[in-house]
Image (cartoon, rainbow over all chains, first blue to last red; front, top):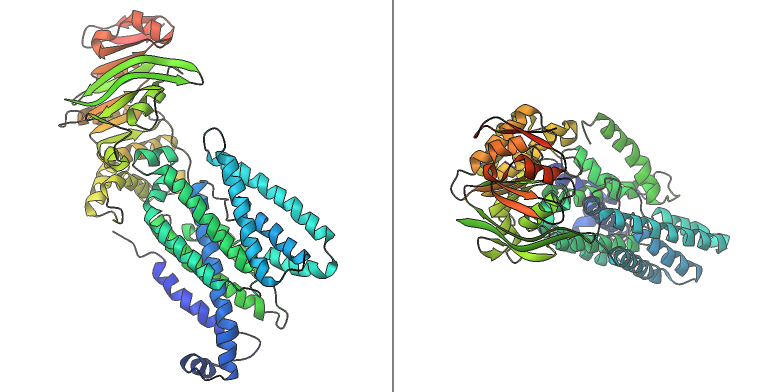
Length: 323
Length: 255
C-alpha cells in the first residue's frame, strides 16, 4: 500500500525548473532559439549562452540544493532535532574560515573551493572526535559540541572580516550568504550527491526506526552504531561538497525536509529522494531569480532562498495539523 | 523448553552493585514479573535480557546462543521489547509507528505488504486504536501513545516479549486489557513474557513466575504465588505489607 505522495510532482518539477533557468536571463532567448540551441551544436550566441553559461550554473544549483536538503534530512534524524540543518554542527563555519582566509591571502578561486572543503573536513573531524572522546555518545553531546565549535568559527570569521580590506568584504559577504557565480566543482558535487543517495537509501527504513529512538531501533534490529557513523560522515561530506561549490547557502537544508514532512513525507524511503529533488529544483529556481530579478545586478542566491522560502514555509506550517 | 537464559549475571551502575550471581531460565509458556524497589536494577536487567546492554559479568542466551553474537535482525524476529518511556521524536503517524514493528520481517529493500498492514491493523484494533491510524503521535494523550507502542510490539509478533512497566500511563481498563492480552500470548507455542511491574496484585493475577530484586544484590525467584508473602515484600519495598484473601485470590496491601 504505497501512496504515490508528492514524488511524481517533484519528478516533473526538476526538469521544469531547469527549463525555467535556461530560458531566463538578461539576454532574451526565445523558445525557438532555445530549441535550436539545445538540438543543434551550432555555435550561435544563443547556444553559447545556454550551454556555456546558464546550463552549467543551473546544474550546479541543482546539485547544491539537493546536497544541502538531503544532508539536512539526515542530520535531523541523526540528532532527532527538527532544528538541525547542515550547518548546525559547524561544518560551514570551518569552510567559511578557510574560504575567507584564502580570499584574504589573495589565492585564486580554484583554491577557494578546495580550501573550503578542507576546512569543512577539519571541522567535521574536530566535532566528531570531541563528541566521541570519552563517555557515552549522545545526540545532545554531539549537538552541543557542534554548536560550540560553530560559535568558535563564528568568532574567527568576524575577526577575518574586521581585518580584511574593504574591497574584499563584498566578495566575502556573498560567499557567506551563498552565491553560485563561481561554481566550478559541479562534477564533484554530483559525485557526492549520487554517493550520498546510493549509501543513504539502503539505510532509509532503519532511519524510520531511528525516529522512535536509538534503543527502540536497536531492539528492532537496526545497526545503530553503523547508521550513526554513516549518516554523520555522509551528511558532512555532502555539506562540504555543497559549500565548496556555492558557499554557505542557508535555509535550504532546514526547510526543504520539513516542507516535505508537512506535505506528508515522513517515511525516509520517500523523504530521501524527495528531498534531493525538491531541494535541487528549489535552488535552481532561486538562483534563476537571483540573477534575473534585479538584472544586471546579481544577488547572492542565499537572499532569495530565504525571501521565497520563509513565507511559503510559514503558510504551510500554520495550516498543518502537526508537528 | 528454555528459550531465554541468563547465567552468572552481575549488574552494576555507577559503581553501585545491583544484583550478583543471577541465573535465570525462562521457559515457553511462562510470564515472569520482575519486582523491585526504585533503582533496584529492574530496567537494567530487562535491557540485559533483551540484549540491548552488556551486563558487568555473565551472559544471556537466546535459544542456546549468546544473544550478543546473533544477528540483530534474527534477535528482533524472536524477541520484542517495550521500553519504559518512549523518546519524543519527529512527528509520525500512528500507523507508520506501528508498522515499524514489522521491520525485522521485511527484506532489506522490501516495503510493507498486505500481511504487514493486516498485522498492524489487528494490533491497533487490539489496543482500541482503529480510529487513530491516520493521526499524528503528538496529538495523542500519554496513555494513547503508550498503547501505540504496545501495538507496535504486538505487530512485531515476536514469541518472546520483554515489557518495562507496560501499564505506565494506562487507565485501569486498559491496564487489565493489555496485561490479559500479553499473558494470553504466553499460551501460544514457544511464547513467553517478562515484565517489570510495580503492582504486586496485577503481577499475581497475570504472571506465573517472579523475580524479586532485594537490596544488596540479593534476589528470589520461582513461581510467583510460592515466593510472595508479606515478609519478603517488606524486604523488597522496605515497608510493611498486609496479606488479604485466600489462596488463589490473594491481595497484598502496603500499610
